[in-house]
Length: 74
Image 1 (cartoon, helix red, strand yellow):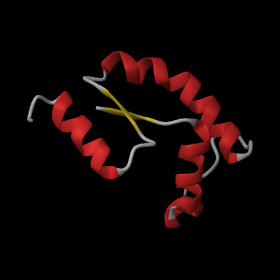
Image 2: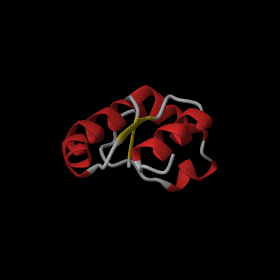
Image 3: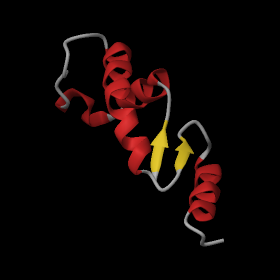
């Protein structure tokens, strides 16, 4: 399963993560720009191997429903 979110959403979650200071920048750019650049590079691979793509902006309950459906468990 690929949990896909836009750069602003993912950067916000990274910034709130207590371990964020332990993650060195890959590009030296601001976090949102870096996430956007990295995801632009990686998204095609992630999408090509994903059984299903889930919307990271959904509430946990919505994600769970999508995952259960995608995996044929419900």
